[in-house]
Every structure is written in structure tokens, then in C-alpha cells.
Image 1 (cartoon, rainbow, N blue to C red):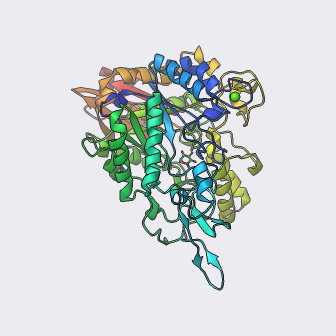
Image 2: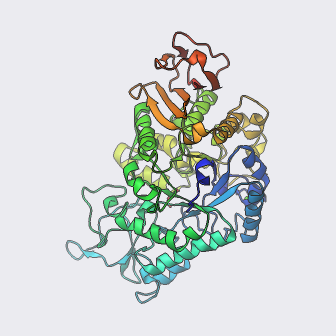
Image 3: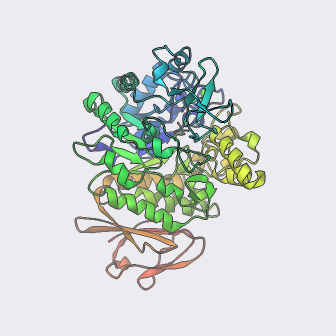
Amino acid sequence: MSFTQWYKEMAVYQIWPRSFRDGNGDGIGDLWGVLEKLDYIKSLNVDAIWFSPLYPSPNADYGYDIADYKSIHPDFGDLELFRQVLDEAHKRGLKVFMDLVVNHSSDQHPWFKESRKSKDSPYHDYYYWRQGRKGPGARTLPPNNWTSLFEGGAWEYDANLDEYYLHLFAKKQPDLNMSNPKVRSEVKDILRFWLDLGVDGFREDVVTFIAKAPGLPNSYPRLPIANGMKYFSNRPEVYDYLKEFRDEVLKDYDCFTVGESPLTDADIALRYVTEGEGQVLNEMIAFSHMEADCFMTDMLRRPFSLRKMKRAFSDWQYKLAGKGWNALYIENHDHARIISRYGSEDYPVESGKLLAAMYILQRGTPFIYQGQEIGMTNIRLPEIGMYKDVASHNNYRIFSKLFGKKRAMELLKETSRENARTPVQWDATANGGFSSVRPWFNVNPNYTAVNVAAQENDPDSLLNFYRQLLAYRKSEPLVLYGDYLELYPKDRYFYAYERSYRGRRLLVICHFSSLFHDFTAPADMDLAEGKLLFSNYKENGLKDRGFSARPWELRVYEL
Ligand code: GLC
Ligand code: CA
């Protein structure tokens, strides 16, 4: 993790490699494609790339099931090619972060294959192998009543050993036993391997789950998904393990760490990210602001609540102020596209710009997910057979039982993370310019209208808006370091906040509605005296102390 401050000023572009760009013509995105697009990435005014997993994987969870931590999936290239990408990225001033997925490995990892050979294997204790419990009659029950996040119960039986192994995610993602010092040594070894190769840091997958409560107790009330979370989320040992990784490896490198932290509020995040001697991560990836249209999981949909979203953002902004640094994002490979969720497909450019400014102008490090910068929207695949993602199938199964198949399908279409995994739309040619052959996954048919090439030369495009916004942010201490203050927190249509720094102020006004509503600035803010820096409409007149806001209108004033 970095003990200097560079990570505070950077913006990060996330690549989900399978769908970014196919460079060798087999229909699958790869590192050849990344090489081709490095100049494009640089042109966005970002400073770093985070790669979702590039390692060899049987793809039970598209790379998040790793079979070899020190190599590159042949679909994506090889280590040599990766070195070249790293080199070329560095030449352009782009840092490179890897995805570190060590809560679990693939069941095809040699450690796991060895661990299941016998109870005496030196690898047996790399995983959570446990005996079943005696149930009623002669039945054997799994070791406890936990359920996975991706595939029913959290335990899988192995007849050869007559034992079960724990998997918090899919069956093919056995959990690594981080309490075993040998496993932690392996992790430190992996960290060193990539750092010595020259990578600049890690996004650490579900890092808050890497420790489990001793004894693995039963959990009540029983939930169909993630039952047992109080025993596997944010256990005190997580901090100890991260400190060990820091002290024994990371402190020797000028690298960045961001932990993915489901089920973690800002107060808990401060445990890890508070600056000073105790800091063990640079940033954490929050979830609460992604729950403004759902409850706990994306599939439990509710109407979008602007107030809920604002509360979540502000909570992290206030609590981390002066103590830690935020990771800011509104899209990644695990969530449906944001214009389709929090914005409006009827006003894709207007709402796309509004959403961009809304989060990028807060205090923290912005992350931009591939395709977000051109306003890609949900594909809404209509049949369960068209889905490839293990979590989507699991959700469909569970929600079919609860609400029936028809409703489950409607929910899946809106919420599946596969909406974010369609190939990037580069131009209006066949397959959206992603590949010269039929891609591994459906291209959103709107590629003819929504694509990079069409937006390149349009000064008013969403793409160019992202560029301007990111350039501005980087050059402006007011945005980088200014204080954050939310205005009108109870308002249902406007998200407005102020940033202030050394007597200068920035006012960000976001109108979350397809209708018209009046905005009135606070008494001490004279918009007519201010300088309009960003907006998403051509004419920007004022009326009284504000203006009548049009659908999804955005205005950013410096005062
Ligand atoms: C994280 C990843 C997600 C993956 C899961 C299991 O949440 O972002 O894509 O499926 O962990 O590794
Ligand atoms: Ca390819």
C-alpha cells in the first residue's frame, strides 16, 4: 500500500478483459486488444488501469476462480505479453493494478487438487475441510447451516474424503483457510511476484470475508443467500492479516491497495483505511450507495430512492473526511449499467453526464468501468438460457421460488451483472468493432448508435464530457481536497453539494428527474455571480435565485 499520496489524485479505469477488446480474432477480449487501446485509455485522462482477473481460470466465475496466481490465461495472452502491456502503460504514465482474489481459489488450483487427495496432504489445511454433522436418522448434514452467495449451501461433499469443503461463492470456488500461516505465506509470495514484475497495486476481492469465526458456528435466522455472514464478514482477524501483508510485503513497495468490502459501513471501513500507523488499506469499495434501488442484493428491487443514495454517499464523505480516502464508483462488472438503474434511458446523454459529475466531483478516487464513459446500457437478455453467469442463475433459482419464474426473469433482466459484461462498443461495424468474429457474448444491439467512434468527434458526447471532467478534477485542488457539504439532504429531486477549499466554493447540482422542478440556491450563493463550469444543456438561464431544472439537468458552478 502506498504511504505517499499519489493515489488520492488518480482516476482508475477498470477493464473486465473478456469483453474489452478482442485483438487476435477469436471472439474473446484479450491483452492484444488492451495494447491497441492504451492510447484511448490514456485519452480519458485516467491515471491507472485495474484489471479484473487475468489469470488462468476455468471460468466458473469468469476469472474470479483462479487456477494459477502467477500466470496469464491463454485466452488473454501470456506473461510476456502482460509485461509488454505493463511497459507500454507505464510509458504513458498509467499505473496497473491487479485483482487479488484470495478469499478462494478455483477447485482446479493445484492446492485444492492436492488438498482433496487425502486428509494427510500438506495442502489439506489450505481449505476449510470439515466433517458433516449427524442429522435426524442416519442422515449427515453439512458442517454448519451457512449458505453461499452464488450456489445454494456453502458446503460441498467429497465422497473420497468423506468431508465437506466450504465455498462462500460457487462450488468451484473453495474458500482458502487464511488462518493457516502457510496460506498467508502463499499470498505474500503472490503479492511479491506481481510487485517485482512492476505492477503498482491490487484491488483485493471480497477482502472483508477472508477470515472466518473459529468453530464456524451455525447462524440464525437462516437466509437463502450468505447465511452466516456475521461469522465470515469483517472478523477481527481480517485486520491482522492485512497488517501482516503490509508489514511483510507492501511497505517495501510504493503500491496501492483497495479492498472490496461488501457488508461494510463507513465506520467499519475506517478500521482499515484510517491514515497513520494503523492503516492497512488505502481505500475500500463501498456498497451502500449501490443499494438505492434494491435491498441488500441487487435482485431485491425497489424503486430508486434518491434520498437513500444521497445518504449513502454523504455518510462515507463525512465519516472519512480528514481520516481516510474514498473509492468512488457507480459501475463495475458486478452491477447493471448505471444509466439503466439510477439514470434514464430516455435521457441517456443528459443522465449519463449528470451521473458522471455527481460522483467524480466528490472527494475520493474515481473508478470508471469500461463502457461507462460512452453510456452503455442494460442488454436485458430475455431468457435464462442466455445467461452465463453463475450468480445470475443462482438468483433466478431463488427468486423463481419466491416470486415465480416470470417475475424472477423480469428482475434478472434489470439487475443481472451480465448487463455490464457485454462487449465494449467501439464503432458501428459488425460486433460493435469488438471482434472480427462472433463474440463470446451478446453485443448490445444499440451499438450502432452508442459507440466510441461516434462519440470521439462529437464535442458534446458523454465520452468527451468524461474527459473534460477528469481533466478538470485532476487540475483542481478544490475537487481533489476540498470539504464536502450536502445541501437539501431531504430533497427528492435534487442532489446538491458544495465543495470548499481555501475560500473557493464549487456547487454541484444534479436534478434526478425526467420532469421539471425549481431549484433555489442557498441564500449565500449567488449563481449569477458564479462561473458555470459544467452543464448538460445548451442554454443555462437563471431565474430568481435558481432555475427551473429540465430533465436530468446538471449544473456545476464555481462561486
Ligand atoms: C467479487 C467480484 C465478483 C466475484 C466475487 C467472487 O465480488 O467482484 O465478480 O464474483 O467477488 O470472487
Ligand atoms: Ca482474443
